[in-house]
Image 1 (tube, rainbow, N blue to C red):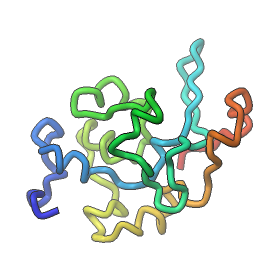
Image 2 (image 1 turned 90 degrees about the horizontal axis):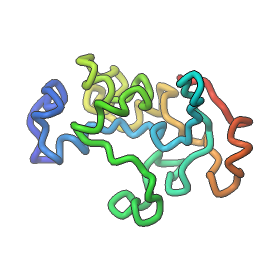
Image 3 (image 1 turned 30 degrees about the vertical axis):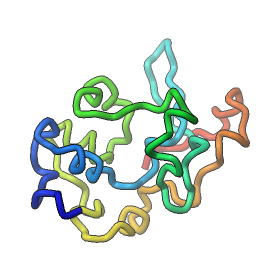
Image 4 (image 1 turned 30 degrees about the horizontal axis):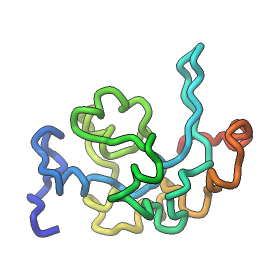
Amino acid sequence: MTDLRPEFWTLPLAKLTPAEWEALCDGCGRCCLNKLEYEDTGELEFTRVACRLLDDETCRCTRYETRHQYVPECVLLTPKSIRKIAYWMPTTCAYRLRFEGKPLEPWHYLVSGSHETVHEAGVSVRGRTVSETEVPEDLWDQFIIEEP
């Protein structure tokens, strides 16, 4: 991460380099949880049913660079697309927080200095998910969780 500017995360998202953008991810894994969005109300609920590519222990995608080959519907998060999907991101997501002009959480590794603090704070999905390969989509509503 030597090509990252000091405290780059305080800059507007449009000013980040591609490496800085990628480094902003807090590693919680919650964006990889399948969500239920109700068309009639627009309400969004998180489930603990995770994308088949999520590693439940590391909270990282096992095929990040080629994920669209396996999961074509995987959202491509960019400084431009965040405008349309910020509401869909977890409220503590670094991308959403910075889009909203808010600071990162104290447990974010860029603030704390450790990638473990997201897990220690109980914000990550480590050890809490079930793979979408194990649960039919029509049963996802039985796996709804409260957003931390």
